[in-house]
Length: 114
Length: 112
Image (tube, each protein chain N blue to C red):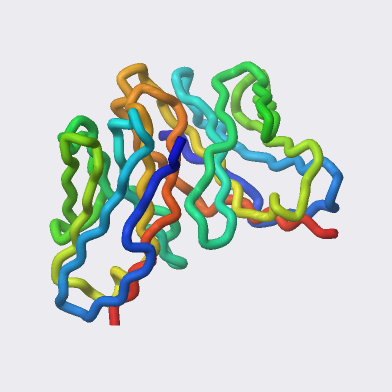
């Protein structure tokens, strides 16, 4: 799986958009970008994933650059409950699901301030 | 639908003992993966079971083992516990053909 690089931490004001960057310059053509988050003392929570098109769901938006070497997770209106460690993971997702392993880095700690 | 269940939630053991942790997946999920989380090493993949077969394994010693039952419930066992095995043990489940995995709340193991 390709390696990812994320800043160590960032903060944003409640109600504002939080833009979390991730670099994955060695990503392969068949690797997806996944985002998970982990709120203190809980299990990680799946947020979103994408291959090359931008994706949006009820939690967040994922913007992937055209060369796929970086991406940004956007939380459009951050709340205090969004304070967590956010992990950007790159992995192959085959139809057989044979590669379910997730390789977590250190992630980025997002602090949402009132 | 019910989420991933892990039991017990907290456990205290002494060095040299062995421990068994349980993970019940979301209904319909056949893949169960196990992870260890420590402050020093972060989240590390232990192994994955799918249809009662181990199909992926991380870099952990043989003291760490697992199994999966026909109802997809999985157990992991750690024998001859060491202080360094103190960690949050998480399981994650999926259908096996899906892109997202769902994590349980974890079992906090403390070895004294």
